[in-house]
Amino acid sequence: MGNTKSHSRFVIQSTITDEEEWSNFIHQHPDRTAFHEAAFLGLMQSVKGGEAYAVIEREDTIRSAVIVTIQREKGIKAWMSTRAVIYAGPLFTERSDIKGFMLFLDEVIGRKVIFLEFRNFMDLSKHAITFTENGYEYLPYLNFVLGLENTTMEQLIARMNYNRRREIRLSYEQGATVTEAKGEEEIQSGYAILKDLYATRVKLPLPECSFFLEMVQRGIGRVFVVKHQEQIIGASFCLFNQQGLFTWYYCGKRDYHKKIFPTHLAILGAIEFALQHGIQSLDFMGAGMSGTEYGVRKYKEEFGGTLVEFGRYRKVYSRWRYRMGVWAIQQIQKMKRS
Image 1 (cartoon, rainbow, N blue to C red):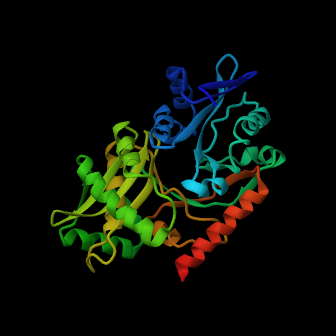
Image 2: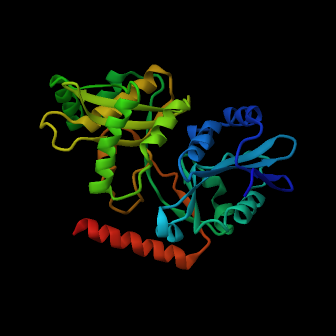
């Protein structure tokens, strides 16, 4: 696609050519997240096969902006898995030409992918009609958000489910600890647990460890590791800026100890970091679709966050390839259950 393609006042760039202008725009926007930072665009492009773009509406100044990530599986599976994902949602303003922005996305992204999906971490209900009129389907995805302003760790733990509080207490009593990862070796040790979880139970794609190393190096991510008797037994991999911290991935060794719950502590380490740095909220990155069973929804709920439905908007560009991809996922899930 090259570095830049423009159409009237809309432009798509593989790099943000004016980072100061971009930074000024997002830092003044009430819905900004770490997924809108210029460093996130660089992160998504840094990994092998990574592809991402900044899409901007500009007249005198920036009026709208998103970062679009292109994702695909390896090998032949790429043919039926290539999709565009916009994490967190778009940054629109009162002066945005939202319909024109969506048409530009169709032009520059629609030909590259099977579908495009806005995974919203903000309330876009006022734009619902515009999305549906432009061919997007609304999906009622849920999430838990934990408010962190004007509170303490003791107060947050007191709001948690009784069993969650008890399991955290037991873990500490047994000598388990959680700290920010110190160096590549500890990140790699935590990643090994995450990789095993995804290979044996989750059965979904997972970035390489280099992705998380790069995330930390670029300053928009942190990894927290849980230790017991000098052994790393859990970890959380988080993206953040001042507005919010996102628990993107987390894990713990299964059946490690009947009184130690490493995944709980991995999330607690993220919460503690956010409190120490004045971060406004912790986002659990999804709780499944409303009305559909989702295995970890109750787990996330027991941390005491607020259930929200910001949903997703999805536009399918190739129906038959999309159906093939859905069928393939269903077969994988059947194999997983057997």
